[in-house]
Length: 494
Ligand code: NDP
Image 1 (cartoon, rainbow, N blue to C red):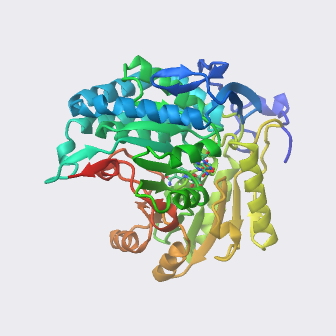
Image 2 (cartoon, helix red, strand yellow):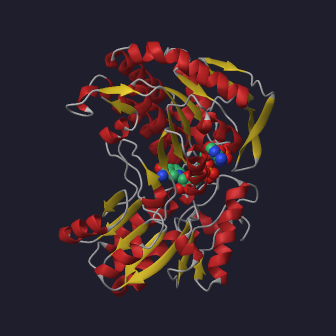
C-alpha cells in the first residue's frame, strides 16, 4: 500500500473534483470520559476482580492502550450469578410498568450521553464515528425504548398464555457491535423480569462498563445486571454456570458449537446468534445505482465486521459488467482511515488477530484463482487497516465464497436464472440474511420464500428495527432477538 502523501498545495488550491478532491480533517472531539481502569460490575457496584487479573484494551486505530480491564475468574462469575439470584425475586415481582420505567430511564440517559458513548465505541472498536454516532448508539437506545414499551404489555406477547421470567440468564456478546449487542441482549431480558450476567468481548468491553454507570444513575436495583469482563475462558464460565436459567450467545459458529457441546445433556435454554455468509442478489431489472449503494453498504458497513454482511454478491449475467464497473468506481472514493474523522467510511479492523484472518482468507482467494481488485488506497501507518476489496471470477468452491471473512472483502459470482440464484444463495452452511434487488414484487416474494435466511431485505440492505425479529437458520443459529419473538425467548409460558 502507498503511504500517505500530500497533494502539492497548488494542485489542491482550486475546487477540482476527481482524483484531487481532498476533505479537510473533521475529527470528532467529544470527550469519551474513559477511566484508566475498569473493574467488574457486580451487585450494582464496581468491584476488583477476585482473580487479581487484568488485561489491556487498546485502540485498534493507533494501537495505544485505552484502559486496563478486570479479568473475571470462576469466583467472580460465581459472585455475579449470586448477585443476580439475590436480585431476581424482587425484580421479577415488580409490575411490568415499574420495570418499564427503569428501561425508559436507561434509554434516556444513553441518549443524553450519546456523543460520549459514540466516541468511546469508536475508540475501543475501530468503527467510523459516523456509524457509532448515527447507528450503534441510537439503535441501542431504541432497543431500550422499545422494550420499555413492552414491559407493561407482556400479556400480549403470547395471547391466551401467561408469561413468566426464567431467572438469571447468562449472555456473551462479540466485538462488532459492542453496545448494540448488549442492548439486544439486556433490554428483552429485563423487560420480561429476568436478571443478567453478561460478558462483553475482550477487545470491546468499555461501553458495557460505561453503561454500568448509566444503570447506577438509573437506580436499577443492585444485581439485576452484572458485567464480567474477560476472554473466552470467562465466556465459558458464564455459559456453563449451573445457576444460569438460560444462555444467550452471539458470536462465531465455532464457539457456538463449543458452547452447545458444553451444555449438551442439560435442560438449559439457549439462543445462538452465529455467523453468516449472506448473498446479495442483483437482477438485471434492478435499479443499478441504488443496488451499488446497497452492495457497498452491505459489505463495507463496519469494515464488513457484520454477521449479516452481504459478503457474496450474486449478479445477473446481463448486468454483471456494468455492476462491477460501477462498484469499482464507487469503492475508489471510499475513505479509509482515522475512525474518529467524520468523513471516514472504513475505520480500523478490530484487532491484529482479525486483520491476520482477513489477510489469510484474501491470500487464499488469490491462490485459488479468483481475481482481486483493491483501489489505490492510502492506509495509516499505525493501527490495523485493510482496504476495500473485490474478488471476481469466484466459484462456489472457493474458500472466499464459503467462509465468513468478517472484513471488507466482497466475493462476486454470477447467475443466469432465478433458480440458479436461489440455489447458489442457499449453497452455504449459514442462513442469516440475504438481499434481493429487482423491480418485480412477485420475484421478491418468490425469493424471500425460497431463500433460507432469517432476514431477506428487498431493494435495501442492513436495515434493522427493534420491532423486527432477527436470527438465523442452519449454522447461523436459532432463536430470535427483537420483536415479540425476541421476548418469547426470555419467557416461560404457562
Ligand atoms: P467469537 O465467537 O470468537 O466470540 C464471541 C464471544 O464469545 C466473545 O465475547 C468471546 O470472548 C466469547 N468466547 C470465546 N470463546 C468462548 C467459549 N469457549 N465459551 C464462551 N464464550 C466464548 O466471535 P467474535 O467475537 O470473533 O465475533 C464475530 C462472530 O460473531 C462472527 O462469526 C459473527 O458472524 C458473529 N456475530 C453474529 C451475530 C448474529 O446476530 N448472528 C451478530 C454479531 C456477530 P473474547 O472476545 O474474549 O474472545
